[in-house]
Image 1 (tube, rainbow, N blue to C red):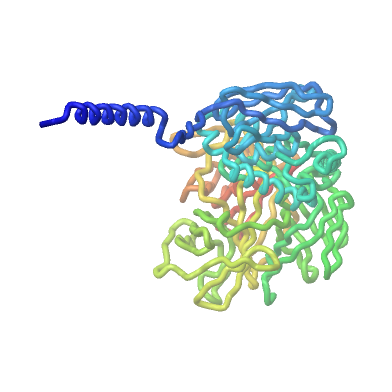
Image 2 (tube, rainbow, N blue to C red):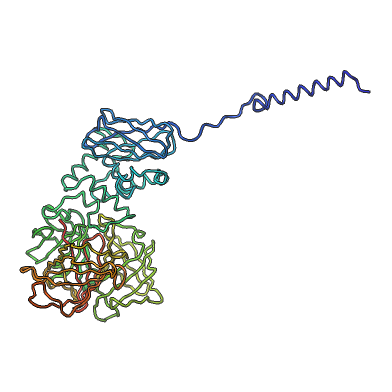
Length: 568
């Protein structure tokens, strides 16, 4: 028999235990311990601060920002400092400040916290342009989820490093001044002093901050321009009085010259203000201005023409009285990976050992390590074949500049040099000890020219004896008609400058291969004044994108022509 008292006591104990358990679970556990409540996630108030400076503190200037989420605005203090408090915002952000002339400077703020530093200056404008690969204004206007996702701290650091390298190549090392995005900025700071120094150099060199930003954006290479322009480093150097595209600095000289044990190339120092060219061994010479971007050396008979990309085509005396063809362009350093891709080449070579020198064309591919991965050889310029097996050829950096072309089948060491113009396009120049020379540009289709386009060119003629017997020759032509369906156009080419008489010439783009231009031969075409007829000889032309230069193979005379458009 159950004891009623015992049963009631057990029931009371069980009831109290159940209530205690319920109480403890409601408090989050035993012993009075509490579970931490997680912090709120998502957008919160973001603080972005810095200083605005452009030759002086930008006082009372409007600062605006767009972030991954949230927008903000503020006004700078008298010393140029500012702070943005942006509610419900997240990094990264792009910022801008309005200058007194109505133009804007831009900057970047990255990270993952609730605060960041972002200065606004001409230097940060360069960083934004480089990161964007285009105009900073367009980047700001279009800033959204995609752009925010790509704007990581690493991406901002990479853009800053690229700008620093370009400035250092131009003779101005920004490292002592610190990071332009975050370093202390204000009158008297190292950052401000560097900005002032660079601004003075740009003024002296007839350039500007926007010019430098455009060149740095193009140098990213994501959207290169075919319009010839100077690279960023060159914009920081003094210019020649008769040629804004001829700048002081270290330059690479490549000479089409045979009979040497090594390819004929060296670096020289160019002083554009005095028009002197010097090197460590052979002295040098003084040039004289002969019109816009044309120069001569009366003592040696040398002639130069400079394109808007800073590339000079020359006829010089190298090792004796014979004048030979040469190229002169700012010395640059490139990673092998920058040369990866497909290329078209036109030049002089021997198809067989000991055979005659002839005009040749190639289409080839390089991988990121500099290894040849594909080759199409066109020994008659029109018909091509791919060798099997593919030659084991690779590029190796040469301590003296450029690259060695290493062929595993022999001991030959030809040289290759790369030059990137301000528009971001690359040109390759190959050179051998026996004088063979080739010029290459990335494989891309050639567009039709605009109707009415007038082109003035200065042409250097190279023979298969590797001499340049003729003075630089001026030519002029005007596009008279365009046939988009046929991919051809007709130009009127001046044959007599004293009378202005022209003859019609038909050219086909992307023939016989994409990237080349073919001039159709014609036995007899009428002259514009009705005085008679003229013969048009065929040629194959390879326009070097972004360089202001075309390589022309004149088949009837086995001559290689370098046709340059003079700069300004």
